[in-house]
Image (cartoon, rainbow, N blue to C red; front, side, top):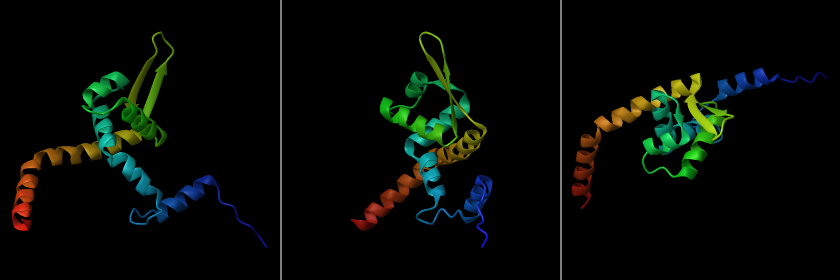
Length: 135
């Protein structure tokens, strides 16, 4: 009896073929959650402009807490979307930028963010119509 063992590359390729975001246990669901979370979208969209230091990013993205921003950046870094560049200077300097994968994701969520800005009036009208109908 021959036991076949797959290489890591073969396992990744097999997982990609089986990816289906509608499946409960599909790893792509987690990626989708990270990229499309409220703070994930805003971090990616901001970094599309240029690299930022943590404090600059926090000022740019209004109402994000230091804890949530740090958590979001760590998550996006772990997923391969964000690059963290810590420079050994005093005081410490850390810059965040997009990786090529992050740039692709950022462009896609940026389009969705811009689309949502342009559709606010239509959504508010639909809500008012719905609320009037349901009242």
